[in-house]
Image (cartoon, rainbow, N blue to C red; front, side, top):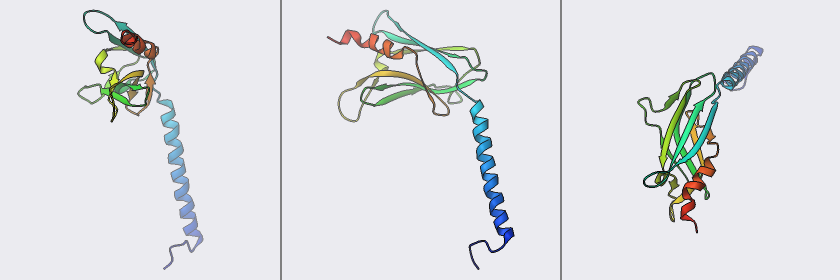
Length: 152
């Protein structure tokens, strides 16, 4: 008994299987191309009693609901930290045309690298269930503003 195809029917079955796999891959790519996370984001610094905090407004501008899992940031050394949106279903659903507001305390905008001192975030993002990160518009300026009083 040989592993290699022996007859024309064997070759036809192989070609049919390869064609089916190709069709499935193409159809999945086309189906996923339509589903896009479309968000408008903005950030502002809130001052009051205590340390300043960030107010991040996330607005779904797409036709479909958006599902977010976390908000986080990246420090200049590449270390990251994220906080999950704790909902019953494990993600935050934002319907079309709806805004959602998140407030972050200043102390949450740092990372802890394996060695050394905590690092301040320099970029701010939200992440959807597919792993796509959407960077917050003017997030870097907000982060710079809340940490500016620490610099000499």
